[in-house]
Length: 364
Image (cartoon, rainbow, N blue to C red; front, side):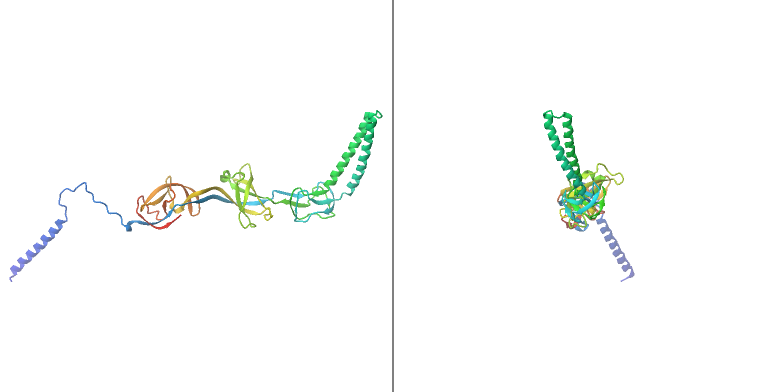
């Protein structure tokens, strides 16, 4: 074959290749005809791989209490140092240290020998003056004596009665008695001691019921009222005990901004002693059906807070109002209802209407 023929065939082949490439390029270009404006191509639905994996919790009602814990101490409702009103020599000690005594029980007997002698003398004087007054009354009725003589005899008889009563009171005061029921402490005197008025003899403490004193910050003071129950624990108790509020201070302490309260608790076995440190648990308010969600689910925003709820595979933001806060949960008082699924993870990636895929779902 000649070289001229070979060149002609090569040119023809190259032209065919170029023509074919031009045809295929022109096939993908628009035809130039107007498109149908009413027909829009539907967007493809998001695939499962596009959904954001999140965790959630189903909101369930549960009991909730708002409470605070404050420090307190136990007190004796009545406590006194038993002493004598009069001076005298201790003749006998009638109590046992640490024992429980009833009101009016004799504790100490002072010497009354001299007073007993005076009482005997005054008893004789009383009988004598009473007889004289009686005779003068009969004479006066018969006009045998004057009215003045009769009145003098009557006055002497009445004075003898008064003197006898005074000595009997003095004798009674020399028997020192318990002013109320309670437990005695350690004695501070011995038999044969001479005591003056006010000399300490033995402490007496009433411990049933026991009193509890505590103070709460002023912002919680309005939640406490007379008759409200509080709970307290001490080193001597193996479980919380109940106490009923019985009194409070009339004003807030300006130094500590607290209000002091007193409560009473039964103490029949005397196990709780006055002066014991106590932890007092004060319940401010209670809810039977509170809605609690994890704290990380609440997103602060300008003017309020919001959470994302899972609905039909998408996330929806709803504004909420919160209440009592715990370490890991917070109460929602408005915005969600029982049965809602609150999203708890992926908060930074969530947007309104974003597709989601629930992984772990807690039941509240």
